[in-house]
Image (cartoon, rainbow, N blue to C red):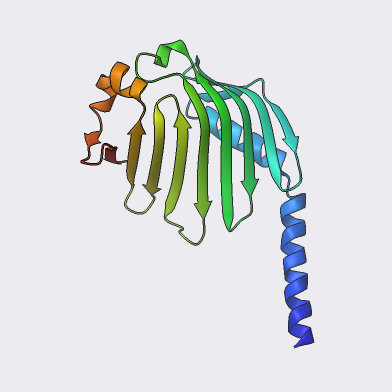
Length: 176
């Protein structure tokens, strides 16, 4: 019994050491390089490896060479069995102001090997709150929006892309 306990403690120690010492900055710069193939550029960011996570601050995001968003902070945690990306204080550019409110407080993206086919997104901001799930096998996005009063009043054209539910939420289902 002691040998099994030692074995599992060594395995757990090895996994934790691997997660701590993995070159997270190199992985980030590789991902940034791959995003350039899709005309998405992340600029002016400060990158800091903080042990088990990677912290990014003051990001400017450009899509098709057009400034699209400014992000105050992003935390990326890669644990293998559970991965998370958390972003705070996102300001969209005025070009997007006609489609939705420009202030997004938080965005949280989660992936777990316990549900390997799903990526979960939660966001909150001036638009309200949204919970979305992307199924990688079915290639389908299912989102539920609880709109704020500002969203209901000023952004009706965007809400037309959603289907209104009986409980006041809005649903969006799309295959990709």
